Image (cartoon, rainbow, N blue to C red; front, side, top):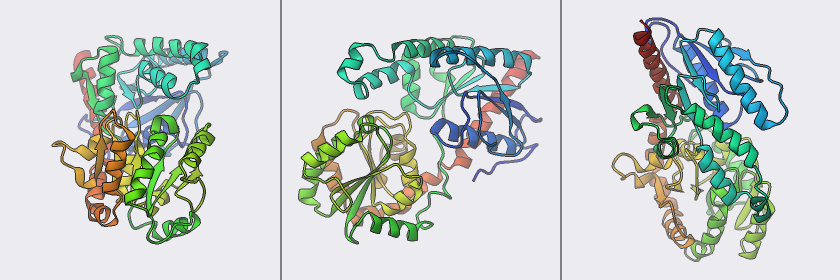
Amino acid sequence: MIETGGPGTTGVGTSLRIALVHARHAEQGGAETWLNQLATALVLAGHQPTIVCRRHAAAPHPDVEFARLRVRAPGNAARQWAFARAVERHVAANRYDVVVGLGRTYSHDVIRCGGAMRKTYLQLQRQFFYRPWERLLGKGQLKGSVAMALERRMFAPGNFRRVLANSDLLKRDIIAVHGVEAKQVVVVHNGVDVERFHPQRHADAAAALRREWQLADDDFLALFLGVGYARKGVSMLLQALPAVLEQRPNVRVVIVGSDRHAARWEQEAAQLGLGPGVGQIVHFAGRRSDPEVCFAAADLHVLPTWYDSFAYTVLESLASGVPVVTTGNAGAAELLLGRDDSRDEIGAVLPRRFEAAELSQVLQQWCDRDRVAACRVAARAVAEENSVSICMGKVVTLLEEVAREKIRQES
């Protein structure tokens, strides 16, 4: 739920016309979820948001409007350029007070970044997703070069007023790749739906799910939830488990999510004697649409990722009262560390470069029912500090600040 003030509480004295630009509008997806949350928050704050896109799903609020730009071009790379040019024409023809770009366009006041810079992403893609022959043949180079060209134009001096990043990790990436001044990059962490992800709301469904996964009452469930097993560190988790089981034989791991090469990790689990299968030490449960129930069934969330500009699952886990073991490669790890690096009562953060033995040691410490029970309240409290309402309130305030800045400069 998003709650914010109505008209007259915004600090700009009037209702703002705000364009939210993203080629694809949908009800699911990280960027899409953030877009819908912001559009709703803007309406509730008394503003007039318009989602500028190529196609869209149902509006997140009855007062959210759409401007659909019909783009016809052969291939993904050409469509990206065509959409960016269509946005340029649309913005020029419509007097918006603030334009927010969520994708690779260059006609905006605020750039919202929710993922790695393209140069960084391509490096990760080559490292984790492409097979040797695909790297040799230069797979994805055309699409990547087009995306990087658009991104360079996005961040060209004079093409934006602020950059909104969802973590300090991403802020550093933006500065390193594009040379943006640090003062122009504002960090607002993603927010979580604290009503949907709630420690007590899904107790019955969680108990049923544990039975479905054939977990005994005294089994300790370490849950992995994510898409893209290589980048998210599933292999490292599997390698760490044998040493954990020597000290914590009741540990069970369920991997929720999807990967087109999932059979590779299932084979690795089998080679390590971990399963995989229902009722075994490791179970690959596939994609599910009820992450709130999965977290309610878990004792610990494990995300040994190699890169996530934020990682929503960290915050969803905390909102469910479940501590997290992750790495410094996740932007959401900043919530565990806190300002004084002392929030170890709600989880653990491994260094950005780590070995399976280090993960094993941390898991041996955290796969303990008494320890996780003692920190459930603190975990929930951190999530409540980062609710959708609070985080979107910060974004709305930023957009109002940009509007005031434009008014001063144009008057």
